[in-house]
Image (cartoon, rainbow, N blue to C red; front, side, top):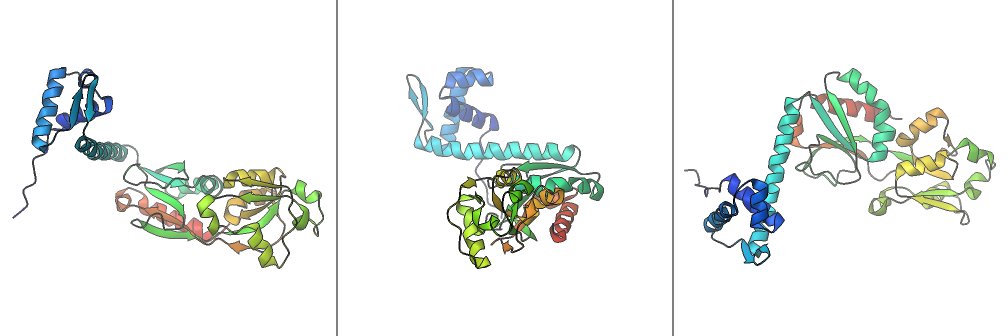
Length: 302
């Protein structure tokens, strides 16, 4: 026999509670909802009776949430957020088919962006929306279909596919190369450092590279540090210094001759790049084609 669930309050009553809680005033809530203050007050009383607990303390200046009211507001806010997301997704599904991909900004601009034309050839009827972000993507809060992430630990509950394992190698601009000889550039040129914060331990640094090369680390030279990969690449192109660049991300600059490989010793990153997606994505038109396309791009190299 199915379990009898408690009857939920009307959504209009819950909305009155939410607006009053956010504004701290029944009168202001009434004005926003086009109701009378008495009507809002009655709805709040009905809700409190149904829950069996007071949600507001009445004060001279308005209303203030009780501890129970604060807890209930968290649930209500989350429920409304999910409703809004569902509405977004339904509208999204009713319009022209589109897939939304989130990726680290440098990966989006340096690796994926130059290849977008091939997506049109691969799947001409599906639009693609590309978003750059350093933040972890909450699939329940944003209409993201896919995320390209560094490592798989941030999305333990999602389906995942390994795309590629990148590596770093030293590169410099032609202008910087002209200022040094091949014998002195590694020991005398300024070094560009990339500060990834907590994730930085997965990215080989100059100390690791010099150790692998069997060279003494050079005496301290003027150095530059950047927290964004794209800034570090732009700095290297501008001749600021030597960069340990990720091969996949500097491929456009290498192809144009904006950057030149200084030494062919490469060090792998400690984690691969992955494609992650929630189960709901597989119901989207073109989702399997997207997985196949990105898998092919990852396998190609460069």
